[in-house]
Each structure stands twice: as C-alpha cells, then as structure tokens.
Length: 154
Image (cartoon, rainbow, N blue to C red; front, top):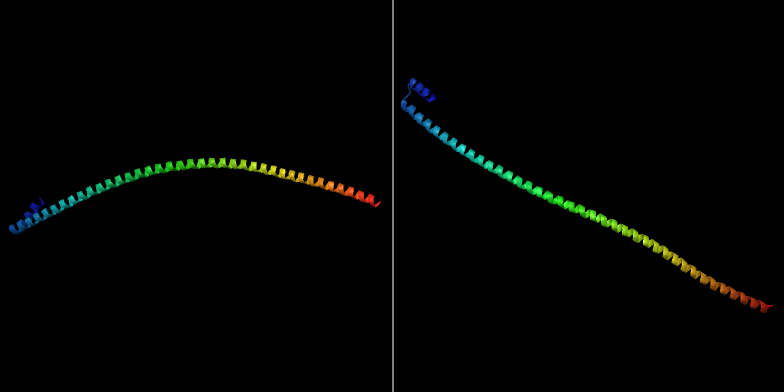
C-alpha cells in the first residue's frame, strides 16, 4: 500500500515512469540483497545457537563427568580414611599391650633388683660373719699367746 501511495505521489508530481521503474528495480534488488543478508544472518544465528547448545551440552556432560569422578574419589578417600582410623585404633591397642607388658617387665625387674640387693646383702653379711669369726679366733689365739707369755714372764 505504501508503495502504491508513493507511486501515486510520484506520478502526481510528474516524475518519469521509467525513472520510477528504475528506482523500483533498484529498491527491489536492495530489498532482495537485504533479505539475502537477513537470511544469511539468521542462518549464522541458528548455527551459533546450535554451536552454543552443543557447547552447553558438552559443558554439562563434562560437569557431570567431573561430578561423578569427584564423588567416586570422595568415596575412595572416605574408605581410605576409615582404613587409617582402623589402623590407628589397632596401633593404639598394640601400644597399650606393649605398655602393659613393659609395666610387667619393670615390676619384675624391680623384684629381681630387690632380690639381688638382698642376696648381695646376705652375701656381705655372710662374708662379714666369716671375717668376724676369723678375727675372733685370732683374738683368742692372741689371748692364749699373751697368757703363755705372761706365764713365762712370771
């Protein structure tokens, strides 16, 4: 409608119909070129949309894969942590057993030291008693000798 109105106005003002037709052809070719450019732009837009959709899909797939691997790694780490906790508990139990055993050995060592001291004391006492007897015999011999000398002296 607008074209016809413009043509009507152009004809009204007395312009040449050939010129008008030339302009119309020129405008039609420009419209065709613009439509073609628009179609190309729409095509590119659709391709970009498709590429964008594919990239988003790939990103989501990658994210899911990473999430899955992360969950699996987390499970492995939790299992390893549990094993380590169990190992620690076993080592603590072993340590307690060793401490108890060491305590028993220390008590036995104290008892043996005590017996050794008594034994040494007893040996020393026995040795001293022997020495005392020997000395008493020497004293008795010296007394007897002295009595003999006194008798001889008198």
